[in-house]
Image (cartoon, rainbow, N blue to C red):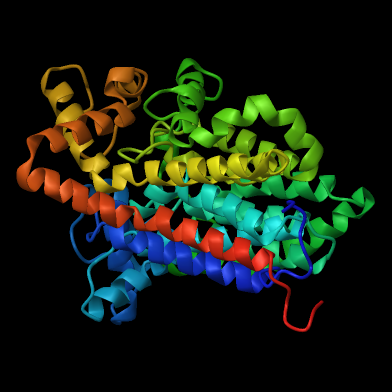
Length: 482
């Protein structure tokens, strides 16, 4: 069974394979998703969405733990937030779930976005000439076998960057100009969700220049730009409605920026990539293979590598300027979640190598993939973020090691090195220690951990089952075909 796409496969239609990806991701991740709204960012967004639906307007009515950050006096004295309107409306699924009597799953919208990303990556794989099973397997590894899964479960909307990047890579892998309209419209919507997603302009331009025929790059840029206008217009309209100005900068983000290319800046760059507490390579271990297979990756997915490199460079250069580059108490590199998209072509490249080495190698590769997905279940099952604050951060603050006063809200730049560059204080090391302690404790503590692990293992099991179903479909002809 080769990796090249088969026109006779019952799963060779992107819509069919994409729907399967969405169903598997949602069925696999929702059983273990935390049944509460954890972060104040999410609580503020959810409050605004609820007030809008219930007729009170897109305003903040309840106190927040830090009104100077979350609350801004907008037009006509409204108490508004600096979040774009779609960032707030995106949490309506959680709102409606609660209204219907369900649990308040704070990560529901971000897990829906993760499912959409998986379908997009599977479609990109098909467009790149891969068999459906291989395309789907790489999409699963990128979305479930990386930091994307636990980060989405923990409510981090940086998954929107990954969605935008995935659509761009899908468009650049094809030949149709109208696909760039889809990409542009998606980027406009993402910008309505996260204003910092403007960094996606870098991979968009790079991919438009790299796609053949290169002389047509300006048409691709024009089509994408025009398609993005509705999203940009919606952002401008919201800014005017809420703040009385089309371009609003009242969030005061300048207070939280460090000067570029200073010591603080370079510490953030290093921390993003290689620190044991926040390094993307530690939280998405598949990416560790990048330096070793980069030449082969360039040969096989040259255009995609250009876009991925542009995104990686832009994200580091921009987010390293944030004083809170650590993403507060996020699990792993909150702002670099989009890097995990590169795991998909890495998996596809590995599949081409494995296919030439027989059934035993294929079985081993599937086992490794399932293991990598199961590994990402651990922080969700063990409640990694909350216990890290309790067991590591608070004792360090009480001992005078950390200088940040509002330790429950964010980590100051002066404490980032103490927390995230020391292996002993890494979230991953703490997670392993906590899991061992819970197992040794026995009783209800151990039983709770095991029950949560069983629920979290729904994702790797669902992914494995779907992969095997599609493998079987690869070997069956479509109805009416020879």
